Amino acid sequence: MVHNKKFVILISGPTATGKTNMALQLGMTLPIEIINADIGSFYTHLNIGTAKPDWKKETIPHHFFDVIHDNNSWTAPQFREQLKELIDQIWKRGNIPVVVGGSAFYIQSFFYKNHILQLPSEELLDSLEKESSDHLWQTLYSIDPQRAEKINRNDHYRLVRALAIWYTQGQKPSEFEQIFDPIAPFYFISLTRDRDQLYQMIDERVDIMMKLGWLDEVRSLLHDESWVDFMMKKKMIGYDLLAQYLLGYHAEQELKEIIDLIAQRTRNYAKRQITFLKKLVTNIKKDQANHEFEEIRLSKIEECNLTLCDLSLYIKQLSERISQFLK
Image (tube, rainbow, N blue to C red):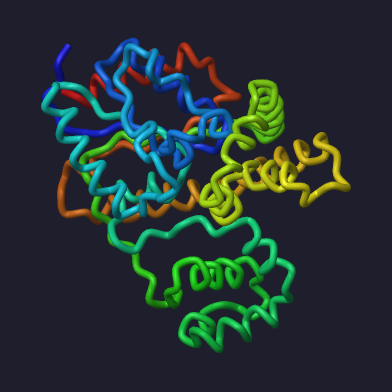
């Protein structure tokens, strides 16, 4: 079955939600090609700790896996440009591009260009959240009076977010403007699960990755100082902690404690992903309604809690909706 309508499916959600499995099942009923949007899976050297799928064995074509062979990285604008080219190639083959991933600033780069809001690090958020609202407001006022005057001095949440933009982006929050410019008409599926189930799945995934040899994977990277620096600075969850453990930085801690800390940080990351995606969906809906092109205004956004639905039935119904969307 060949489709000529040019549009893109995007599937995102917090880590361990089941995004990859959904995409593979969708591929049983639609002619798709999967595009990775999880930062860890770009790297040939990172496999177990990134939960990279065994993509080479799949019959569905996969893209943007194992595309970075050193410890450099793609910026969101670089990803967007590469994504545009790949989407065109997939369309020419008569297939549907399906972008799958939880790295929110890469997903966001499909919808917004230039000023891309990246997720602040856990360490930065922890540091800011420990400060009093008054101190945060005074700091923000010294950096960006225009933005500070629009935030209540007691609004701790907004003050943290404003300063996170400054420290992460190097731009004043008042000057930070997103440009809504989707690469193509889209069908965006934002997944989630009930928190208890999601956290349980995260804990189980961490245990599985350890049993598969995650510690040995990190050990194999320690012979190269540049990869040690990468793991420490990039803060890809778990890699830094396991590297520190192997290097003796946490000699007083048992490996079990390190594993528990990795699971905790992953749960915290999932929580931030959920917040970020909710905000992203809200922004897209608002900007979509005012867009000049009807195809963008008519593009679909769907939110699904996988805890509350039968996945097989949902995939069947989703395939039918997408088929209707193609007409």
